[in-house]
Image (cartoon, rainbow, N blue to C red):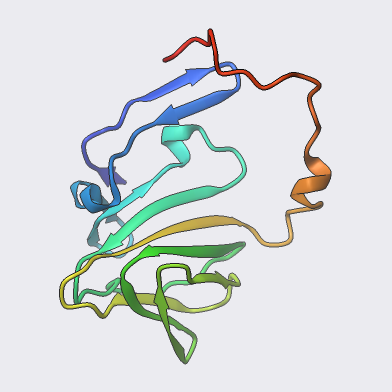
Amino acid sequence: MTTQPSPVAKTGENFTVADVGEFSQLHQYVFEHHKKGVAIEGKIFLKQLLSLTSAEVSLNTLSPKTSIPFYHKHKLNEEIYIFVRGVGEFQVDEQVFTVSEGTVVRVAPDGVRCIRNTSDVEGLNYIVIQSQVNSFLDSTIADGIGVPKQVSWEDKQKI
């Protein structure tokens, strides 16, 4: 379970929006891994907050000179890691590579993985998207449908 200040989500008929704060403030969130018996500071999962139905997304930060304290893999889900700030190392199976802002990594379910922040001063910030492997059936472009409506930002309801 996750113990943290609870961000408030606002919903409409076709959306959910929430403000979890800046990446530099993610340390206020702590994920408690009940199976491993460890707490990971700087991690918030978005599935429940946003009522996600097709993927799990988490926002993450690792403090300088820290590592995720365990290896893990998945049964069904691949993970996509998008690094947005900092520098670190990513380990998959027995291979290690450098990650930094702009690095994107996909890991198959069976890949044994771990991450560490190698900086002395800066946090390592990243987003993880998790979804079932081979479940995406078509391209994003093919799924999109154009709507014959002129774009306008005037006279819209603000929430």
